[in-house]
Image (cartoon, rainbow over all chains, first blue to last red; front, side, top):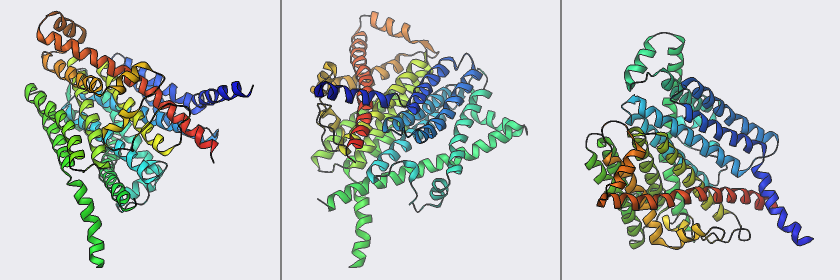
Length: 230
Length: 247
């Protein structure tokens, strides 16, 4: 009796974490993204809607996790990995439809590099999330991380900018500068949206670069501290 | 006396940034930047630079151990450079082949599995989970060698892969070689991936042989990537469960 119930419980407990509500939302996000990228060339608007819904679910599953007390490490990792892969895939698509494509390849490199380094430094300093950083000397860093709404604006701005860029491009590979320039010059609602997004995007990329330097310092500091306390 | 205390931390920090293996790491980054800048105008130079960077990857690990200059920063720099260079090459391939989404999917799998693997390493070093998984893990982030000490008992392919360093090295090199070959043999227009690979293999030339060998190692590596994601996800879940049991 005791032996069989001891065997069952770990597996059931493991299964129950995989079936947490926020994690199921996470699986839905993955499916949405797979389907979205499957149709991205044949139906741009459907792709954008699905991609945006997935982005909204990103906020929802965090809220659900706290509300239902179903916060899990697996859920946080699933969230982060889905974010990185969906942004990377969108940047890969953008590098195909715009010239020079290497601009988006560089943005992809910066996104992966900065988040990867940030994650390491989070582990090394024992903080729970890279969004909890508040002790840096850099004013932009403090402004960014000190204000969740501002941070949210910058993150959303990036995704919105990339989506808009994908939606307004024609089938042939177009010059990025020309497309952005003409959309800004229109003076339409789109222009305002693009301008707003560009601003938030720029801040986010600058923060990404600073993050890499700060995180590298944390890695170095970790080794130095470790040597001092054998 | 107080001055010595002030300057020492900054000097020590600078000295880690100037470790020989880390300088090799910076060279790798530069090589990759130049390589990708030239990739469309001069494919061969790109391939040579990319391959040299890949070789430096092995060299800097060896240097770190030989000169006793192993550092967390160096390991992270190594890993990030690897991931970004492979990602960029896959993005380039997605432009020159149809269907491009094949390479976007491989990019997703590469990032996803390595990201989860990193979490696995960290959680194992933080947590206390000897009972449910039969494995051993060496020091956190001492170069690439640590995750290769994992010997998961539940999967034979996993054991075969991680049990044999040369086989593992072959699979990793096979992926990079396959991607480089695919880039080199692609024509100017976007070509069908299946057609290009099939016609190359059918040629019966040394290239066919190389492609076949690379395909085999690549297939094994991708299968391992998928298995790694599942195993790493289990570690994330178990970490929470163990944490709840020991308040």
